[in-house]
Image (cartoon, rainbow, N blue to C red; front, side, top):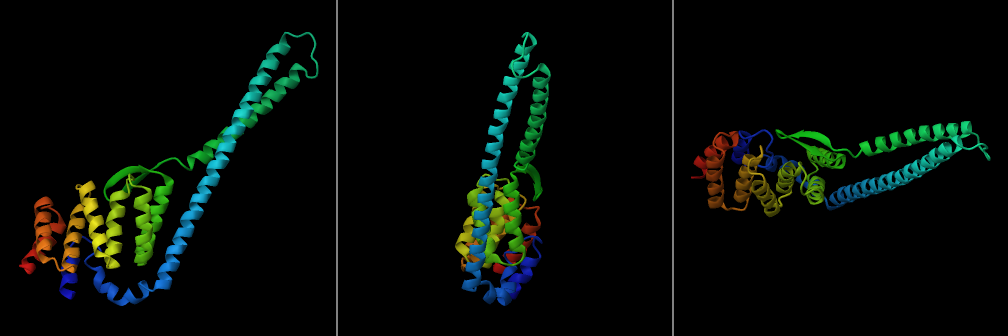
Length: 264
């Protein structure tokens, strides 16, 4: 175990998979307490549900504001018509031309305020530019919020809750620009939780969907680590040989070459 960790530390500083086993030796008992895991998962579910409820409430409010805006616009058009008709009339029934002009002005001011309020609210849903793992892409605010929250949980070392949060993220946002990075860290969380088969599946999904992603070589080395954990040394050697061929200039390839000499 110690020699495996020593070799893994020479790889990319962002790859946690082959270094987590030693650290987990101390924290394993606390991380896998059933009650704490359930509590963390229930807490995350509650936050997701509250977030969805808030979004639905805001969407309903925006719809109401839009209806009010249309109503105001209809009233303004009516006032414009009345004002135009009043110019040619000799007598005014209940309003003077000045009254209509003042009413029109007041409605226009209210319309401007309403439009500004709607625009301010909708701006909260405008996509934002995100830079992650050497790539830039546009993401919805809710995507950024959920990914950041999941990663904060991961950094705290709560890998059970992080696995739940990242798994929920990739299911909810399958086409997100965050997807490849989310799969990478999900695989790491699953590896930490000794869910090796699911970990390998997510690393392989990343490699299949985004072979040129900056973390692709790290994901391939992570697959080899999983294969070693599963006692598939032949498969691990083959994976590392493929890694060296596919990403020969990467730091991960250096680690793979070193580990290949030790496995032979």
